[in-house]
Image 1 (cartoon, rainbow, N blue to C red):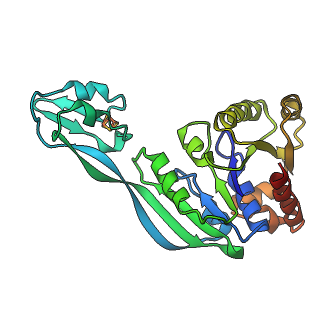
Image 2 (image 1 turned 180 degrees about the vertical axis):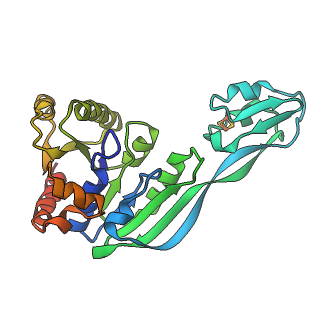
Length: 276
Ligand code: SF4
């Protein structure tokens, strides 16, 4: 079973939930796909054994073959090309790899060259959790390629937890794609509800079933419960709003580290997800 853990914004407790779930139900594999800010290793005390580069192809200008086509620069909506005099300048950090400029320019004008987008790290984590994390190179935009490289290292047949990036954009879609179930972590505030509604739409597009985990529960706002009831979305767990817990998470501790009673609760959560 592949369970992704997502949420509309950063700092909502996705990694805390994902790492706690992985520890309580180990041995399984943990894929840290939050490649712009990978911090799962802190919670899981992962020791890196192997690091591999993730490279992508970007265009390099050689010389115009045939009629110059400076309009290729205007075609690039990402600003990765600029026509300057006789040359086409390429800014590889802005290229998203759509391939359009290769189609527009005469054959041989551009050649593909490798560009380092990030790194994939494999590690051994505590309690036998198999750990893989992606790290985007500073300045690179190729988030989805690094996420794909992490997911390519999934061990077939092994239960897997995926820690997703925040938001509802392309990176989180790439991380959730192919999951059997997605846990949406939210907080009981109007902002939490707004982000949850966006995440729900995303799951509908991807055709992935989902359930909700409310973090910092007990603040008195009932909007999340009302909406989940109306939309028939199960609330599978609630983590209380507790200063001790927040301080422990900030130190890189998981829920079972703080209180062993969380282990059976997280096992039950896993079983509930399996049933759904
Ligand atoms: S491959 Fe696409 S994004 Fe990259 S430079 Fe060419 S047109 Fe721009």
